[in-house]
Amino acid sequence: MLIEARGVTMRFGGFTAVDAVDLDVAEGRITGLIGPNGAGKSTFFNCLAGDYRPSAGSIRFAGREIAGLTPESHARLGMARTYQVPHTFTDMSVGDNVMVGAFLRHRRTADARRAADAVLERTGLAGQARHRASSLGTAGRKRLEIARALATEPKVLLLDEALAGLTATEIQAAITLVRDIHRSGITIVIVEHIMEVILSLADRVTVFHHGRIISQGTPGEVTGDPKVVEAYLGRSLERQRQRAAEASG
Amino acid sequence: MARFVLAVAIAIALVFPLVFSGAFYERVAALTLLYAIAASAWNLIGGYAGQVSVGHVVFFGCGAYGAAVAYSEWGLPPIAGLPLGVGAAVLLAALVGVPTLRLSGHYFTMATVALAELIRILVGNVPVLGAAVGLMGPAVPRSVWDLSFTSSLPYYYLFLAVLAGLLLFTWWMERSRMGFYLRAIKGSERAARSLGIPVGRYKLYALMLSAGFTAVAGALYLVMVGFVDPDSGVGILLSVKMLIMAALGGAGTLFGPLIGALILVPLEEISNSLLGGQGSGVTFVVYGGIILLIAVFQPGGILAMVAGWWRKS
Ligand SMILES: Nc1ncnc2c1ncn2[C@@H]1O[C@H](COP(=O)(O)OP(=O)(O)OP(=O)(O)O)[C@@H](O)[C@H]1O
Ligand SMILES: [Mg+2]
Image (tube, rainbow over all chains, first blue to last red; front, side, top):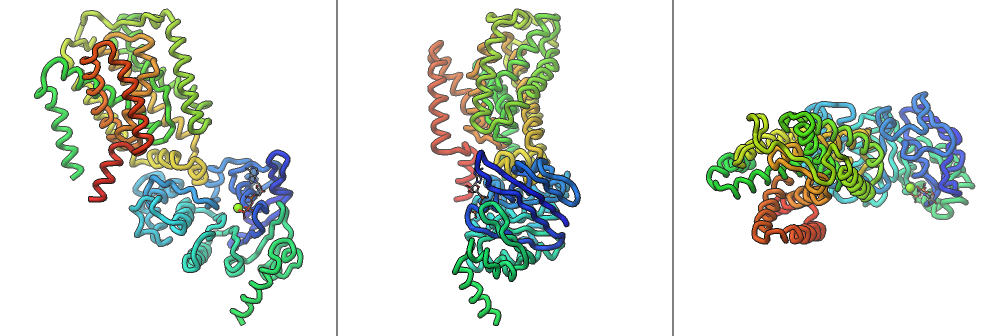
């Protein structure tokens, strides 16, 4: 397993946002995390990426204990992330944003520039490289966050709602990008609200509810789990499954 | 085009005091460059890394007092105290930076204000530093190494060379990993860390560099003016001036602090000479007004404004 989380718990004061979560992420897979608003997905993500030091539990990454290490050491070890609310460097150009990521593995400016250019090309941002990051819309910023993370040459990419707030066409483009990144050998963990996205991308899905995992399995297994249907998705999921069945059948 | 502007600017800088000769012009021109050095040094941490310090006068004071002490204690030429002043400033930056740079945004700024005031009071009570009275440089030059000239012209060219060196360094830093990292830290510390930047360490580097160059300005100040006391060497007004010059011209840009100094120093010197002793009160009011104008209308400063027009036309 590339990532093994055991008993990961995150408390804010008396409130337990993530409660004893065990999660395995297999190398080379796309692992999906779903759950209703406030289920604890982002908090768990922040524990994985080192933004938070978990109150309890262990996280092993490529066999090494990383719980409590700084975010910068997570990045150096090969973990990259995007944020639910983009944190792009708005005063810098799109290309320079990606350069910042590329400097992690390339000390010299010319080398970093070359690596960043390749990432810009691959993520379809080459045309906007000289524009300021603040000129991008939501879809562009989310894409830029992915590009910047990719430039750190990670083993695993953690995407927190990278597709939220996008139009249908933008979602299709983003799915293509995620698939392409995955094909290049990068393991992906993705949080997503949009069911279609998770169903079409993820190999395995984990469902969060009130800070705990209530179901785990293939997308098919999870969506058929009565606990999930009851706790989170209710009837809307039934409708989505019917639609999906009609579409594929 | 940019190269042409730069070449013209350099040519003007080289001949300016020869064309506009006269003690007053020469003095104002030299002081402008001195403040440009201090503001450009401040720019490394305050502009590029976005950590707004209002305590930088302390580093300036390290340089000024270092040079003064070299003369008063050991009878050396003041400029020989430069390494002492720069060393003290860099050390102080390291000591002070570790706890204060952990604070975010306004809290860092407030900590620097508090620290600077504390040090001003301390300096006023240390006999070796002249206490409240201050220290003098050599009254009459003993050799050329005292760098004591009646004309401001030699200072002008000395400061011009130092400023050119500092801007060259800044230009190189802008393009290096450090420059990218500092701008990323200014944009979002959280995102910067997630991309592998040891944020605390880079902020500390920037503060130490900035402190060292600010101390150079302080030592040059003593060499030219020949006198330092707690108000002129470690008084808060100078910290504010560095910040305002950088912000007015464009904080985090190569030439922003220089442009700010080019506008403000002549303005202040002229208003002081017209109004005499009452000038300093007016200075505070003018600076307060400029802070307001920048905050309300043009957070990017003059250079950002010009760049905006450029793009539109
Ligand atoms: N820093 C914090 N301090 C206190 N409570 C927090 C903090 N961060 C999150 N929480 C709480 O923890 C719970 C889980 O939040 P989290 O953001 O992890 O949910 P989520 O599953 O990502 O939700 P969403 O789908 O809306 O993004 C919420 O009740 C939230 O209010
Ligand atoms: Mg979330």
